[in-house]
Amino acid sequence: TVRVVTGDDGRAVARFAATQQGWQEVTASVGEVPEHRLYLRRPVKRGQATAAEGGVRRTVDASILTPVRGPQTMSLQASPENLVVGGQAAVTATIDGDGSARPATAALFGPFPSASAAVCSGSPVGTTTTTVTADGSYRLPALAPSAGGFYAWRVMVDGTATTMPVSACGAETKVRARTTTTALSQPTAAVGENVPVQVTVSGVPFQGSVTGTVTLFGPYTSDAERQADQCGTIAEGPVSFAHTQGNGTFFAPSVAVLAAGYYAWRASTNPDDLWLGSSSPCLALGTLMTVP
Image (spheres, rainbow, N blue to C red):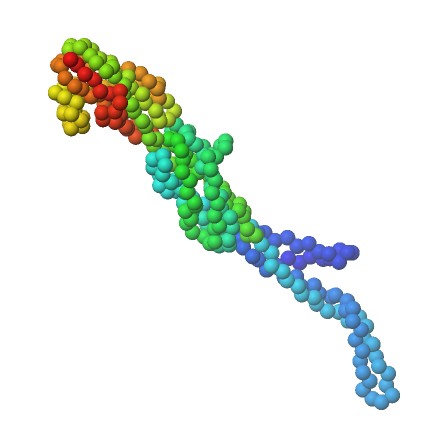
């Protein structure tokens, strides 16, 4: 309770410490207010005059509900934490406020080369919105990242009459890219010749260093036998390669051909933390070789 005195304008100000979030009822009780109505006392006996009573005082009471705003709390969880390009990335926000309906917006930032580098700055790759109808956990609508790397979510929840807006950044999500590997060899070679194979790798994010192998299948006595085997009989390899520039075209270490026949080459890229491995198609155009 706070006791104050009105000024000449009839106004008084009382201040209360806002110690509790929510709707608070404030009641004012003002005493000794001059009565603006005229009170008449009727005569008791015939011939008496009606009397007007002056100096009447009264007490005026008034109350109002006023909101006290407090903070909301929110925690984020990636849902899922790991996926492959083409999959759906989402974030689950667990919110504690006042239980009122309010908008929530999620923005996805990335890609970044590491989880420690994932921040909520720059232009997001996409945003989604939903309505928070009460306190609890909400999985916001998903987005489909188009590139490999690490991503970070920022979720913003509007305030209400009794809560302040809240935002948080986190819920790092790892997205693995899909790589493509192709091989290209010379169509013919001589027995004992060292044959190089041209390898092309694409889809590696951030130009990370890639490793892999090339394998020579055969020898087959005919093309029909080669087609039937479907890269099942290894002649040489697998021979490892490493390419520090990530995406691009390069030559794998050469492989010596030891016998005559029909052959097929195949190149494979190893998987890594941010991408899936891949292999060139078996018996693809440009991978077939004949040694007379």
